[in-house]
Length: 269
Picture 1 (cartoon, rainbow, N blue to C red):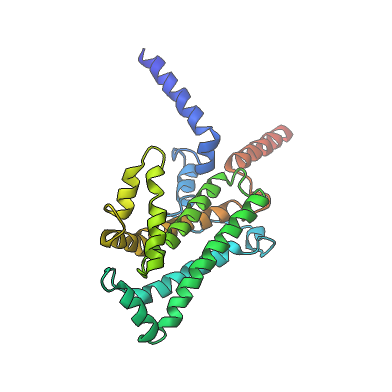
Picture 2 (tube, helix red, strand yellow):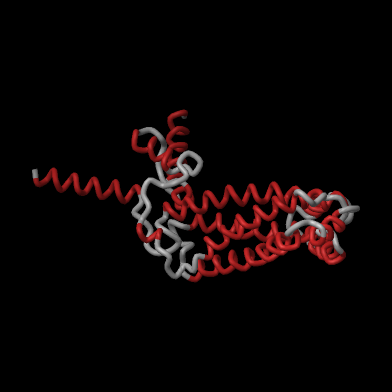
């Protein structure tokens, strides 16, 4: 009975490992051989951020428009200007609006930095959207890039949430009522409903708890999630041979090619 269960477990494990979902995420087998042990190190974004080899095609500036690079540049600009703004902004409903006014009138280069932050946020939404349109139009979401497409979709939502949470921080009438309308859609979320609204707002209406939650999400949680996803995204682009074009051969193709060459050489010998 135990041998039967073991064989069923082995068959189920083999089916999962050989599935397209598993292959799109993991590019190597179990670390049971020296080859797979090295591939674990070289294929992990946190253990080996840069790939061992980079194709010439991946380094060329072609018809991809560089929208991904522009989006990353805007993210860096938003990070730098956002840190500057954090020195003068207090997430308190009694002083937040006054902080924004003082920043624009009494702080040296404050008005310039705030406008750079605001316009960079708008441009990042546009550039990320155009980048996704380009990827979809050129079919760069197809295997073996489907996992990276999912990462890109997550980055798109992170970008939208960054824009949404940052909209409330000036705490003016436009921001308050816009976020009120936006958060009122949360109770209609399938399955979750009201808990989503309570997590976002922190109470029965937009107030101090909402401002604190949006501020923490805007300056800590969402940028951190975006940075991690971008690291994975860039690494997978390099591993997949660029944003578009033919992908590099997989490990299985290389092993099959090596076996064929070994068989041919053995037959000749």
